[in-house]
Amino acid sequence: MGYIPHTEVERQQMLAAIGVTTIEDLFEAVPASHRFPKLDLPGPLSEMEVASEMQALAEANEHAGDFAMFRGAGAYHHFVPAAVNHILLRGEFYTAYTPYQPELSQGTLQATYEYQSMMCALTGMDAANASHYDGATSLAEAVTVAVQVGRSKRNKIILSHAIHPQYREVVRTYHQGRGLEIVGDEATASLEELSELIDSDTAMIAVSYPNFFGQIEDFAKIVEVAHEKGALVVFVANPLMLALFKSPGELGADIVVGEAQPLGVPLSYGGPYLGYFATRTAYVRKIAGRIIGETVDADGKKAYVMTLRPREQDIRREKASSNICTNQGLMALAASVYLALMGRNGLRKVAQLSYHKAHYAADQIDKIDGYKVWRSKPFFNEFVVKCLKPVSEINNALIAEGIIGGYDLGQDYPHLKDHMLLCVTEMNAKAEIDALVDILKGLA
Image (cartoon, rainbow, N blue to C red; front, side, top):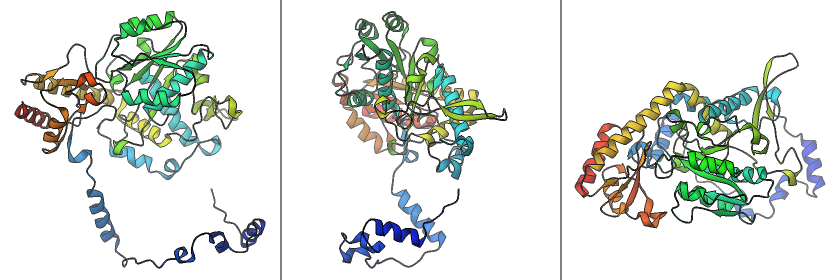
């Protein structure tokens, strides 16, 4: 698309319309001494010198590659093939915005359609949107859908305490002032105890798969009770785990949300990340964000378009369920490329490596006097360890040896003082795990 600058005549017309004569008149509020200051810049550098200086500046930042990483808790260190970033950097993707005009945006539309299709395959759901800001806002949007499905006559939202603490905080912030009753996570209620809270006023109950402690729970009973009472069941799921375990769809979920950062999105100091949202067909018209559909053009050729758009741009503002002005489209593309590159078998291999390495680490740590691994339920790539001293003290000792230790659960769950959540992925070599175990032994 060509860029057509304003002509001098047009500029003069615009200046005259606002009552000034020159461009400089627009900056009168800025003191003259600060308008065009003399810049004390160093002399020019060659490309090689600039590259060297920029590299030195970049190295001042420590990153996941500098450490052996054993911390997850919602953000995970996984391998990202170089091809993912190379495709993201293509201009037509890197600068793309909402693809309203299908005749100009078939590439972006198809990529998003593929993302949606693969997320549906992973979650066992019928439809997915083109992403939210992060996993926490996806869960908050699930609350919006559940309340709408209940025609605003059901106002109770039940959250498991084993959902990521920050996700639960975002839900409360997102829906403050709406008169919703958000319960269930004030204490450490089990799924059986949560099921007793479900009644005819319940819009939804949300559980985590795996839960924040890495454990995989049996959801059969709570799903049965929720559906008997007419409430929706929302799963907050790690999408990578779904390559190895049953999908939430098979377990009875109505909506599946979560953080898709493990699928080709680097840690990046906490963002940008990628919230995914998938649901059954019955609720597809209630969900926020964009959805891409497949159709045919006037010549009968396959084409992709934005569809089912209950957004504030398309309907009356007061009818919009959410105000999502931009999304994580580039991150959704990263997930698409990652999933396409890995394929079904590659993704399963990553999940298997994470699972087996985590269980090897858990076995070794469990043998150390003074440490106790939670083993009451199966786990994927994270597990809880009861320690013999404060987690902060252990982590200080680990970081001195180039290891980032576990998440201190005591900061969110006071009854779990001296408990840490350790994470192991395919990125952790056996030597790293053994080094972690040796240091923990030394602290025992």
